[in-house]
Length: 226
Image (cartoon, rainbow, N blue to C red; front, top):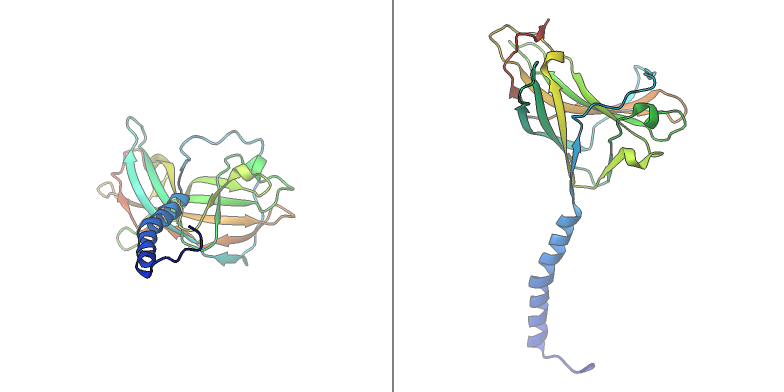
């Protein structure tokens, strides 16, 4: 009955019940909101009507990606020659703000003049040092494009959310510097370019972010060596 006094013991018991019952539900609800995404980039990009090379400057603003990168899996695609490996790179948003990951594959559409907040996201691979040499120059495995003018070209990662990016790496297209008895160790990474809204010009870029894991790959006879 409304207005009836509740005994102190009953009130404490109710508070204990609410804490034990409702708090787990709130935690589960928070975890459910942090979705885990997947992005398959193993299929070829659509044919491009034209290929443009963006302008740039040696004096660009450089920032760090608010992401954590980890190699989740790496396996050879059966029956492929030269060797093609499928790798899964997991990216996690470690910031307190949402991160807009470019996912578009049609550069001519997403990066065309007039679109706003245009960006290119690069997925990279490099060979780690062999015989105390410096790591090789990165090779672009695949790139994606994003623009606020085309919402479908962007995947929003909320704080703490992850995306598994599936990549296809053709070993025959990489340049290694090794002897025939050496197995190169590969490392995956990523970086991002940001363009001006007024012209096709890179006005900012990020540092390269590398996954800490490395995988040994047996060299193939048709691998091009420097």
